[in-house]
Length: 307
Image 1: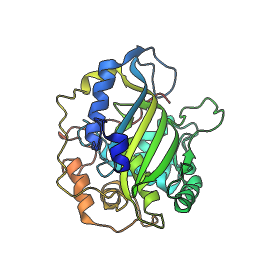
Image 2: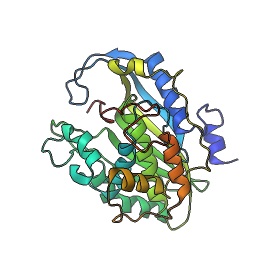
Image 3: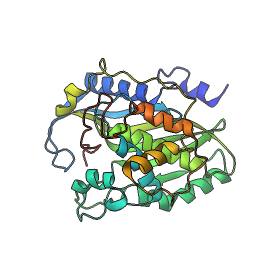
Image 4: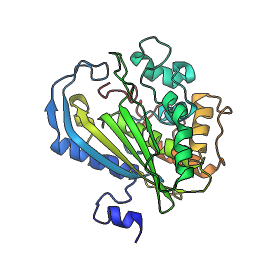
């Protein structure tokens, strides 16, 4: 009996793709969410939300892209993981990062809640722990600043943990706040990329396992309610082999061809065309990454959670 058999044998979420996990999360929040009055944060913008407290979703990191969400910004989908893994918090990292994140910056130069600096500082520690003991429970990093001041952007993700079981690496991300309608699909891919980046740096190879995303508050804003009709959102079929996301031509090519970002500074691994076909399938094969699956203009970006 394997680790997955013991932990997930009765779990209906077993081996869900990102699409399946996200759609189920939308259903659960819309069915069970209770109304919460407007918050005063920049991201909430005084909007009413519907919230489930203490929610968990789980998805297979070999299939990390939510393909069925309307109005996805595909350029940002590609840009955010590279931004985080580079260790940057600077808005001028790319035009798309600047376009979406500048309204949440207090100084117009950097983002207070960016994950990149924390990831860069602690990645080595996580790798050392996993290399030193494949069964460790100490491969943990945090993204939360102690006693953060009141600012426009406060990190939504508090911490992450990685476990290797049965030659698969699993990740557990804990979020204080998770906006289902805008931020979550981007977070899911970023979390999978961070895990894949760590996995590809280990001495002994591992396969990608599952990502669990725990949220203190999982919510949908009132103005997003009608756009999140799960009966109308059909996941695209993955027609390629499981996506080994540490082999990342998808992000590289999208950034190079569409976002015009020089990615030569990053140490990417084993560029293959298959994954690029994957991101193009997810975006409907559009050359304009700011179009959604139906050719409509993409939404302003993933922000909107309670910052």
